[in-house]
Image (cartoon, rainbow, N blue to C red):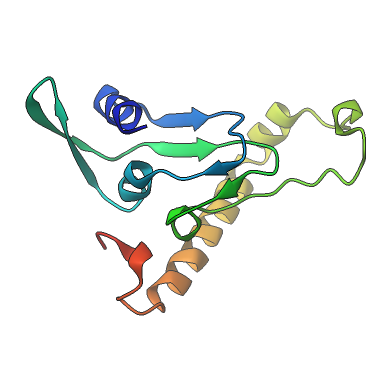
Length: 133
């Protein structure tokens, strides 16, 4: 995981998706990167430092987070409320909907982040997940 995270950051990727993660997920390297603005690692005998500007996403069914990961990750659970979730149909075209409602969706996302940051600032500074704040 350490080499993968380092290579992803050095490549300058904007988004990294770990798809279909099974069982329990824990990574000390990823936990560190999620709360840092820089990441250093040794590559071919030399040290390399990269800025952390990548959005890391994990997907999986009944995925659990272990170690420090639950303190550093925002979890989104999607419950289709039906047995045959693969048979769902939708009345809208998601791409058109996003394009038509972009301003409202961006404002809602920024409001959620603002609320999250305000609540996080109320946690004592000794909390482990504040990392490099």
